[in-house]
Amino acid sequence: MDMKRNEEPSKRFSLASLSLRSRHTLCVLILLFSLPALYILTIRLMAETHIHRAGNLFREGYYGLALARLQKADRLLPGDYRIQKELGKTYDKLAGLPGEKQPFPLMQTAREHYREAFRLNPLDAESAYALARIEEKLAYLDRRLHPGKNITGYDPLAYFREAIRLRPNGITYHYALAQHLHRAGAQEELMLAARALARIYPPSWRQLKKEVFWSPPIIEAYKVGLHEAINIKTSSRDARRNMSYMLADEKEWKAAIDHYTEAINHVNKSAGDYLYLGLLYLQDGQFKEAEINFLNGLDISRTRERDMERIYGIYTGKRHHNELYQLYQKALTRYEGSGAMDILLARTLIDLKQYNHARRLLSETNLKEPSAEAWYWLARVAEAEQDWNAMELAIQKATALDPANSRYHLIFSQVLKRRNKLERAEREASLAVGYQENPSPWLYNHRAGVRWSMKDYAGALNDWKAAIALKPDQASFYAQAAEACIKMGDLAQAKEYARKASALN
Image (cartoon, rainbow, N blue to C red; front, side, top):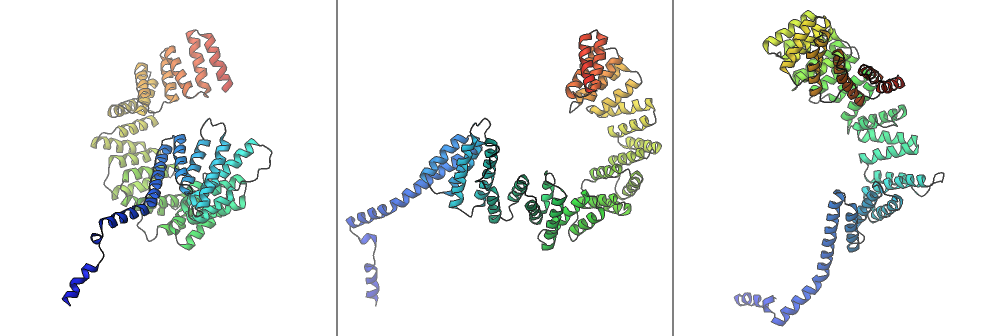
């Protein structure tokens, strides 16, 4: 038994048991058999290198060099659908370059490569979509080149449908199909496309409503799609939200409230959810429900002061000042007060013309922590009461606390001009001009008026010229510039400005 066990290893084949000549022969045979595989691997590696470099060149805008690389890759690796697709994309890009005199042949070549890519891989939705777009471009160019000719031979719609069949939830494809159907005047099919978009992607409403084809029939079709999305429960929450937004656009407040309430049921509601519901209730005249939702939103808000400002805009936009004041009174009892909240309450009181109350609140705010904005609103209170002395003092303090605020300097200049303090008014107007973020023709017009009062007609004219450059359709600027020219004795220039003023008005 032991003898048999010892003999078995000697019978096993091993390379060491072969003669030197036999080993050399075996190595040569292995090398010969591996050479074709190595050759194929080398060719593929070279082709992939060209494809990679072509991609980099394309992204950098070197389309001609990218094309040369892709053509090399195509010679090395014919029948690769990726190379064909990239060739189509590159020819398409070359055809669309500014100054290209013969885009049509380039687009036809792009079409041939896209077709070949799709033939090689009929499951590639990208190739089908690219074919749809290039067919559409070719049909358009053909109509331009041959006006009046009955254009045939292009079928972008078939390829759009093929791309969507291969990728049913491709949002980009659905959008492009809808736009194509509108251009083709296929209203019935466009309604179906809008319905499909609503069903698969309810937030598409935000994009579609900007399209020129957004109209009552399309809206109704879109609503049908949203109802389908709600029923299949795959995206019912988004569908209900967007249904609410659409209904709010149509001022269907109660239905908008119902859909939004359903959308946010059984989820952790955000401050934004409560604020939006508050807005809907306010629009519907349900002030108590609006107040409840606004306060619920403020309870969990991480940006309470900013949201308070937002609520202020909502109420004042609808002129519900009394209801806003009641809301603020409750908010102040629920949250720790701040200067920003006090200022918002004071603004509400100003809207209600309760100037004494507003002034007292703003003064108390400044006692706790002086604020440029609080002094600004005190200036507005003084302006409403025509107390120009108090207004000058308040706005001066605002500019001292926030010296880079162009608006404060402008208001300071305006009250100084009213009080006939012209030199100081001109300095403040210049500061307003210097600190403005976006040049304003009205600021230059104000400073021109101050300089006119100072009999600085040359300075006034320069400002009106600056105003004209910013707003060349304002007749009054030309008329005032003409007056300044008359004062300076330049009648020819005055006549020219007067002519332009007359032409505009």
